[in-house]
Amino acid sequence: MSHGQEWPHGNVDLATLTGAGWRPTALREFILKVHQRCNLACDYCYVYTLADQTWSRRPQSMSRTVWQATAARIAEHVTAHALTDITVVLHGGEPTLAGEEQLSELLTDIRTAVPRSCAVHFGMQTNGVRLREPMLAVMRAFGVRIGVSLDGPPEGNDRHRRYADGRGSSADVERTLRRLSGPADRSLFAGLLCTVDPDTDPVACYEGLIAYRPEKIDFLLPHANWSVPPHHPGPLAYGSWLARIFDRWYEAPVRETSIRIFDEIINLYLGGTSRSEQVGLSPSAVIVVESDGAIEQTDALKSAYESAAATGLTVQANTFDDALAHPGVIARQIGVRALCATCRDCRIRDICGAGHYAHRYRPGTGFLNPTVYCADMIHLIDHITARVAADLRRLEVV
Image (tube, rainbow, N blue to C red):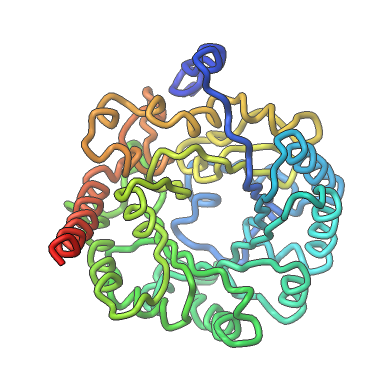
């Protein structure tokens, strides 16, 4: 089917928005797809197993010509918007497959291109199965903060995160995490990313993750939408799972780690803003550059339909300011104006923010819908805010 008139395409009027005083938010996080392939075959992967298969038509690895063009565009954007700090994330596929020599050259070229007045924070998201000393040496040299994907204890992780031959990945990841959680490389360890699976015991999952002493855990709902619903259709399967972890985390006598979705919900409830794609109405300042130089929206949109993340722009021919004029990028920066009537009128609107943008997709109406996890989000947010409100009332009494 044609998606050209689904919201926001053909529906967002940039001239009207700017005429009313709206201005785009400069991009501050640049995700570089340095390698398109992966050495795992996770059964829920939005890149390989869901709707968009454009990865198969792109170069396996980002060339120096592409990353130098990217570096020049980043520097141009930094200068145009007088940015004082940005984040550049090495991503894939699996970024370590690019090799330490290529990544060292890429990081050098980016750091050289960006004006000294702007701090560049480097990150990498990896499955962790082949993170060995030569690669770690490069990460140390550039201060690259490493996020590792792990779905809890071995029995939970290996249910989904496997090699193509069916072997589980947990033993190989554990070797990496033992090193990253030790004193020598702890400064590199940014945290863990875990995809929610209601078939795994939530408390056992959480306790398996904190055994590695991560400073942050990011629990992500599996990418799903109204045409491809979540695997577990049961009532509140995902919201209840997260609520059980919240209770275990919140009741701990000392703060064991930061859990991003919980911290963001609490912060929003107390009147703050969010930097998470999963909640809140803060403008998104993230853009993706594919291995061929294509400038794309958040790659989670690949779960919706073929080329859902595409902008038609490239770093070879376009600026990042051009991307700020794309309807899909605008839609993730205009807050309440990007919500359907149901979400605009919702009592938890400013906290939930309609959930993850990719999870709102429905054929015909596009992304102008509540998240497919709507009931789960309401349950989780009500659970968290009720506990926080009760504690605040107790503090007022004291």
